[in-house]
Image (cartoon, rainbow, N blue to C red; front, side, top):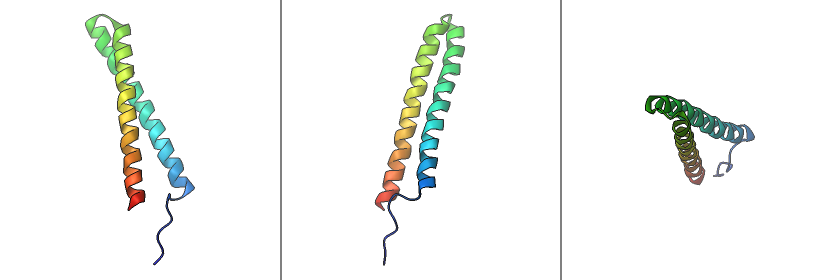
Length: 77
Protein backbone atom coordinates (compact mmCIF):
# COMPACT_ATOMS: atom_id res chain seq x y z
CA UNK A 1 0.00 0.00 0.00
CA UNK A 2 1.12 3.51 -0.75
CA UNK A 3 1.78 5.91 2.10
CA UNK A 4 -0.17 9.16 1.96
CA UNK A 5 1.74 12.19 0.77
CA UNK A 6 3.62 13.92 3.59
CA UNK A 7 2.97 17.56 4.21
CA UNK A 8 -0.49 17.83 2.70
CA UNK A 9 -1.70 20.32 0.16
CA UNK A 10 -0.54 23.87 -0.32
CA UNK A 11 -3.97 25.13 0.80
CA UNK A 12 -3.66 23.24 4.08
CA UNK A 13 -0.23 24.72 4.74
CA UNK A 14 -1.48 28.21 3.88
CA UNK A 15 -4.37 27.81 6.29
CA UNK A 16 -2.01 26.69 9.06
CA UNK A 17 0.22 29.72 8.55
CA UNK A 18 -2.85 31.96 8.57
CA UNK A 19 -4.12 30.31 11.74
CA UNK A 20 -0.83 30.96 13.51
CA UNK A 21 -0.81 34.61 12.40
CA UNK A 22 -4.41 35.24 13.43
CA UNK A 23 -3.88 33.48 16.77
CA UNK A 24 -0.82 35.61 17.50
CA UNK A 25 -2.60 38.84 16.53
CA UNK A 26 -5.74 38.07 18.55
CA UNK A 27 -3.74 37.13 21.65
CA UNK A 28 -1.64 40.30 21.37
CA UNK A 29 -4.71 42.51 20.96
CA UNK A 30 -6.46 40.79 23.88
CA UNK A 31 -3.35 41.40 25.97
CA UNK A 32 -3.37 45.06 24.96
CA UNK A 33 -6.99 45.58 25.99
CA UNK A 34 -6.64 43.56 29.20
CA UNK A 35 -3.47 45.47 30.09
CA UNK A 36 -5.14 48.78 29.32
CA UNK A 37 -8.06 47.92 31.58
CA UNK A 38 -5.78 46.67 34.35
CA UNK A 39 -3.51 49.72 33.99
CA UNK A 40 -6.47 52.09 34.31
CA UNK A 41 -7.63 50.14 37.34
CA UNK A 42 -4.22 50.37 39.03
CA UNK A 43 -3.47 53.93 37.93
CA UNK A 44 -0.59 53.35 35.49
CA UNK A 45 -1.89 52.56 32.02
CA UNK A 46 1.53 52.42 30.32
CA UNK A 47 2.91 49.63 32.47
CA UNK A 48 -0.39 47.75 32.27
CA UNK A 49 -0.39 47.92 28.49
CA UNK A 50 3.25 46.84 28.29
CA UNK A 51 2.70 43.85 30.55
CA UNK A 52 -0.54 42.95 28.77
CA UNK A 53 1.02 43.05 25.32
CA UNK A 54 3.97 40.94 26.44
CA UNK A 55 1.63 38.42 28.06
CA UNK A 56 -0.50 38.34 24.90
CA UNK A 57 2.55 37.77 22.73
CA UNK A 58 3.68 34.94 25.01
CA UNK A 59 0.21 33.37 24.81
CA UNK A 60 0.29 33.70 21.01
CA UNK A 61 3.72 32.06 20.86
CA UNK A 62 2.56 29.17 23.04
CA UNK A 63 -0.50 28.78 20.80
CA UNK A 64 1.68 28.72 17.69
CA UNK A 65 3.94 26.09 19.22
CA UNK A 66 0.89 23.98 20.11
CA UNK A 67 -0.41 24.18 16.52
CA UNK A 68 2.99 23.28 15.07
CA UNK A 69 3.40 20.32 17.45
CA UNK A 70 -0.04 19.03 16.51
CA UNK A 71 0.72 19.28 12.79
CA UNK A 72 4.10 17.59 13.25
CA UNK A 73 2.44 14.77 15.22
CA UNK A 74 -0.16 14.29 12.45
CA UNK A 75 2.57 14.16 9.80
CA UNK A 76 4.52 11.52 11.73
CA UNK A 77 1.55 9.14 11.82
